[in-house]
Image (cartoon, rainbow, N blue to C red):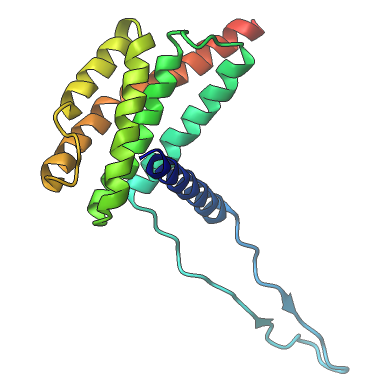
Amino acid sequence: MKMRSQTASAAILILLMIVTLVLVAGCADEASPSTTATMAPGTTAPPEPATTSSTSPPVTLSQYDKDLADTAGLANELVRYLSDQGMATDDPRGAVIYGLRARTVALFCRKSLAEGDLENARTSMTDVYANVNRGRNVAEGDVAQILEKAYTAIESVGDPTGDPEQAAARLDEFISLLEPMMSEAAALLGSEGTATTG
């Protein structure tokens, strides 16, 4: 069981790295094609320039991929920032990190269900529960309420492969309920950043 969890975690990490690379590649400015013109002796107008173009098809990402990249990127930024602040393991701000991680893995699980990859859905659901429960253990205030409400949405899912349609609906609700974690993380990064620089 531990090996499956490690395999799923590795698969999620690889997927996130691929999504990040695709996003970076898609955002790069394309260089304009180079043209070369030479004039024959005794002529007044240059010949028509020869142009070459290497156009690749546009990269399209699913909404799951975009949400995965956004959520995972924000979680990683918050981890780095709070680690630099010397965050303790029982710090309530860590609940935001766990909430973002739970949302990231839930997005991967939901994508796996949509693609019919039941093995990855099963193993990633275990990580969803682990992260949301870690967050619930240290959360306070609004973050605690967000995590509790989100947990209630998936509490009865268990193994998502037993009823993939119901699991998909519950995961959609869970992902939506954890969306406020994005704002919580941004607020932590913004308020903490201005507090330390001001």
